[in-house]
Image (tube, rainbow, N blue to C red; front, side):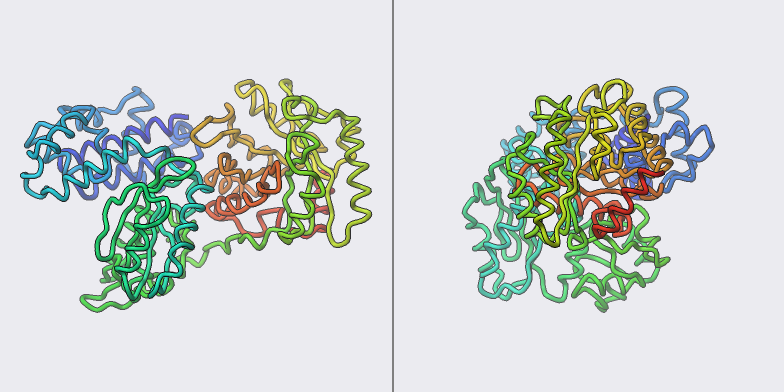
Length: 573
C-alpha cells in the first residue's frame, strides 16, 4: 500500500508551507489528510480505482487530485513547488523543542541559519538573542531543546511512561496544599509510545509544589522552575526523560486537563465547534464573550458544547465528535470487566513462573479462569512441548482443576503455523485442548497472509495471536495483509488477539477497531511468561479502548460457561 508514502509527502508539504510563513486552513488540511492516510487501513490505490477517495474524511477534491497524481506519476508537483528554495536540513530543525516554523523562518532569513550547526552558532554567539521575538530566555530554551533532542532517548513505552508518571505523582501527593494532581498528554490518551510526561495540578501553595517537584530524587536537570510551571529531566532505567508540571486554578482544571490531554486534532475540532456556537474554548475554560461558563471539570466542558463526555482514549479526531453528537459513543471496556487471561506461559516452556504461582496470582487479580498456552514443538528455542509432553501437561491440568474451587485452568497451546501453513500439532493433540492459539514465529516474509488464513480455516483453531508480528520501534512485523486476515476471521468466526505486551500491542488500535467493525471478536491476552507480566493486561485494555471496544467485543469479559460455549461453537462452525 502507498498510504504511508503519500502521507509523508502531504506532511512535508504542510511543513514547507509553514516554513514559508503560511498558516491557516491549507496547512491544517494537508496535516489532517496526512494523518488520515497514515491511519487508513484500506489501500488508497483500491479506493482510487473505486472512485472513493473523497469518501475518506479529510480528503477533499484538491488533495484527492494530488493522491491521483502520485499514483499515476510517482510524485506530487506541489511538493517540488513548496520545497523549492528550502534547505532540506531546515526541516530537521522542526524536531527541536522550542523551534516552530516561525522561529526557523526568522533565523533563516535574518541569520542564514540552514542547519543544526548554523543554529548552534547563532544561539551561542549572541546574534539570535537580538532578533525580534527572541531574547535570552528563548535562546536558552532552544539550547535546552537541542540538548534534549540530542540526548533524550526514544519515546517511552507505556510501561515506562505509567511507572514514571505514577511514581512522581505518588511522591508529590503529600505536598501541603495539594488539591488535585494527574497526568495528561498522550499518556492519558493511551498512545502506544509517549514523549514527555505532562502533569497537571491544583494547589493552594503552588511554590511548595514546584519546589517538591524539582527536588524529585531522580532529577538530573532542572530545565525551568517558575511560579506555576516547571520542567525537569529525570534519569530512569531506560534513559533521560522530560517531565513537565503545570499548576492551574481549580475552576480551570477541567478545561486545562481537556486541553493538555489533546490530541491536537481533537482540540482543533472542538474549538471549531465552539466557534460556530459563539463560544471560545481554551485551557482556561469555555467562554461566552467574557463570561466563563465551564471549566471546573471535563464533563462540563463537553456539556457546554452540547456533547456528552468523551473518554481520553477516543480523542484522536477519528469520528468521536460525530459519534458524540449522534449519541453513538461506545461504552468502553474497563479493566475490571476482564475475567480471564487466555495466553499464558509457565516454566514448562519458556516462562519463569510455575503453574501454581500463575494460578495463585490470577485468582488474586480476580479472574475466574485462565488458559495455559505453552509453545509447540517447532519453537524449540522457547522450550516448545512435544505432543507427548503436551498430553502430560493436559493430564496435570485436569488433576489441578479437580482440586480447584471457583476457578478453572483451560488446557491450551500456542501452536506454530509452519512454513507450509500447517499446524505444529496433530488434530488428535489439538482435539484434547480447550483453547487453540495459532501464531507465526517463523518465515515472516513467506506467504504469511495465506498461512494465517489457512490456520483460521482449520476447524480446531480458536485464536490468532499477535496477528501483525510487529514490535514497536524494533521490528516492522510480518509481510501480511491484515485486511484479508480480518475478512477471513470474520468469515470463519475466529478470534484475533490484542497482545498486551507493551512492546507488541498487536493488533494495534487502528486494526483492532477495523476487526470490531468487521464483526470479529477480540481477545486481550498478556502472553505473560511470569507472574510480574500479568500486569500488562492494563496496556491491552487501553489499546482496546482506543479501538472503541466494548465488553461484548472481547472474549475475556465472558463468564467461564459463556466462553466454553463460544469455543465449542467455533469448532462446529
